[in-house]
Length: 329
Image 1 (cartoon, rainbow, N blue to C red):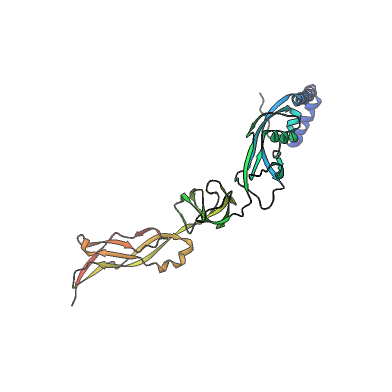
Image 2 (tube, rainbow, N blue to C red):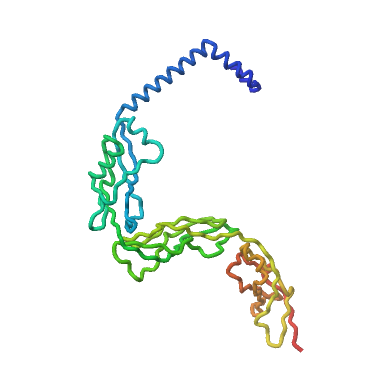
């Protein structure tokens, strides 16, 4: 087979295509495409007239809910329904958002402060959307939602942290807290006076290298709902930067009447620190001590203390120093 010449310009390609479609093979190819298109069209028409079964997830909405009524459910009500009808009737619901099943609040409320929707009302509402489609399965087949007219109670948001980690070159640099600090709790009965806060779900995040904003659900006590039901929690993260300072060596447990001189008299200390406090790092009060009681030959071991909590990977340039004993005059 002769290889295709990749250097053909567009004019050559256009001429070859025109010549092809003018040839017998080209006309036969066009005729084949026309017949395939016609066959496909008639197949679609026949398919649309066939009876099909499709599953839908239909959200439920309530109209004309009074402003002083709060539904005691934090989850949207979804009807999982399987319908059977002609393809032409169901195809228009196959694209975009599913239709909403709507009920008027006054038609489904009860004196016991509950919304109760029986299977008959649900089926009638679905047929109002899909016409004469047959409902094959329906879950749930009824809906019961308590509601309250009580004003609710404002409580604090308590952030619960789980496993939160950062990359090796970053650090959590402040308080992890919700962007709103209070929400309102609602319940069918009076909320206990000693209930003053509501927890978030535990927050887990790994390998953070920048400040994160996480949407977290609230976990109110059973039988209650929180409004809003979720909050945004800010996890402040910033990069660590390296720095090195010189710290004098302090000798401890020196013999009475003797002066211990170390060589060198000061050592370098390196560490990582949040970028936001870099300019204040010179105020850090590290203590590098050489314990005479733990001497080994002509050297004293070094130990560092007074490390600020925000500093990380603190290291001394050397682990010991030489010393000389001077007698007091």
